[in-house]
Structure formats: structure tokens, C-alpha cells
Image (cartoon, rainbow, N blue to C red; front, side, top):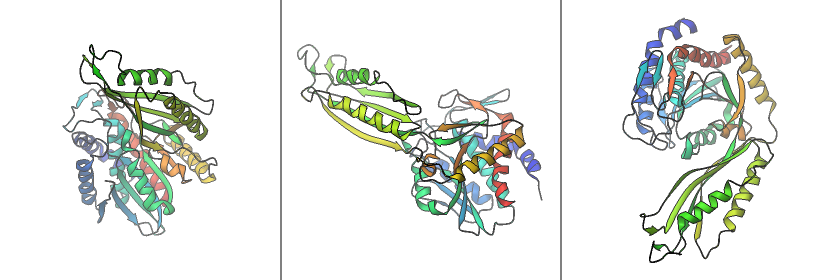
Length: 372
């Protein structure tokens, strides 16, 4: 049998080629079809007899005979809206491409680990579920993870998400609420109707008030206005404008307090000036009040494994990831990265090619521990 060390060494060039190939396939959230089909075909070629794509565009491959599930996923979508291939280049030992680290390299390590496990005797008492999932980023609202937990939740023994960089692991769900706020006014000509309410000005005042909010002293709580749109021309009083707003907290009470403060500000807007509509675009759940012992045990095991492999301890931290869904339901879950890099969510994103082998070893040893 090929050892983990031998396998990892033998696939290094393939790792790089797979990352480059996947980075050429655009995959904005909700539009991951081409990447999903690439992954489905690859996993079939890797020996999985049945690989499906569900209604949420998750690619699912199963291996094992038992009903209990050890699940590992990595997301196919990126934050970038482009539908044309994005640029890529290699400088020294760095591979540059938008989405290379978040989450393409982790996705490739999932796929390669799955192929190795497929070559081993089939587990009798449980099954591995490998998922190339959709809609982790932004307004994807964790659609893929939600679907997986809805379909398999009662059977999931442990849930791993490969996301982020080596050195850390997300073990605490940061919840969030995301909104589109739209203001509509009478508008008019900038000179002839001067004095009429301006939708942009209404939102500007709202944003000013939002940034005067004192965050609650309940865990870490944040807020952000990320986009604003509206208006017609420089000489038109804007009839309509909208903004995207979110708040996050690693404490459910923090979310509740922010919700009250936000809607209190909306109620203060004079309806004679503008009609305000609010659309909830996304809601990521946070942690339950009681963390199960199985979660604590999972974290202890991961820390020990990481120390054994790398002679240092990983940093456990809160995060907003696919693990929010299982964590909110008491399913043991951990999100960890399998590559080193930087510039995530920018067009200068890069990964360290020399870290790929270490990352693949980590995910393989993590999954193989269930075969001991």
C-alpha cells in the first residue's frame, strides 16, 4: 500500500495543475455549475462509482457501508463576480490568482485526499462523505452547507470544512444578519426641484447614524455598510438608492442587540421624506448556548494531531464559515485551512506552493484517523 508520505510526494505536480485548472473556471456564488461539473467528473475518474450534484449544486461522493457519516467539504464558489477566466501567474514559489487560497487549494486537497481514501478498504461501520459545496461566500448564505445538514444532519458524526490557511482552525460560529435597505423619494430636477428629499441623502444620514452605534459588550460584535447604489445623474435628485449592511457577533445576544439598534434607526426616518424597505439577504446562525462535549473532544484531537505533524499548536478562533450550520445544531465541526497564503478576497490573492504538501498531509491524517 502507498503510504501517506509517498502519495503526497507523488501528487505535488498534480496539485499545482489542478489548482491552476480550477482557478480558470469562474465560480461566483450561485453560479458554480462549471466547477461543480469539473469536480464531479474528476471524482468519477478517481474511482467513485456514484457522484451526484444536488439541488444546491453540491458535488457529493460517498465511500463506506455504514450509515454514520464523517463529512469533509470545501467550497467551490469565490467572492469574485467575473464570469470570464481570471488571471494567474507564478513568481518564485507563489501562485497568484483570485480565489487560489479561498478556496481552490483547499478544494484540491479535499479531492486528492478523497482519491487516496477511495483506494483503501471500504469502511464497514461508517462512511466518508466528500462534498465540493456551493455558496459559502457572501450572499451565498451557506446554501450548500444548509442543504447538506438538512439532508444528512442526524447521521453526521463529525463535520470538517477545509477553508482558510494553515495554522488556524475555526471552532466557534460567528453569526450575522445581512440586509439590503432601499430608500425611495419623490426626487426631481437638481435645480428646479431643489429641496425635495434625496434618496442618497436619506441613506447617507442613516449610514452616519449606524456608525455612531456603540457595539454591545457581548463577545465581539461588528457592523459594516459594504455597498451603496443609486441615483440617475449629477443633475437629478435621486429617487431611489440602496445599501448593503451587515452586523456580526460571536454571541447570540450581541446579534439581538444589534438588530434592535438597527431597526430603531430605521423607525426614526421620516416617512414623509422617504419610503424605506428592508430585505433580509442572509442570516448565518451562531453558536448554541451549550457546547457539547463532543465538540471539545474534536478540538483536543485536532490540536494533538497538528502538534504531532508540525511541532506547533494551531490557533483556534471564531469564524463565519460553512461550519456555522452544523455548529448551530450541536454537530461537532471544525474549519481548518490546508495551505499558506495571503490576500484573500483580493485580486492579488496568492498561495505558497511549498505549503501544499503539508496541507494535504494534514487533511489526510485527519480523515485517516477514523480508520484506526
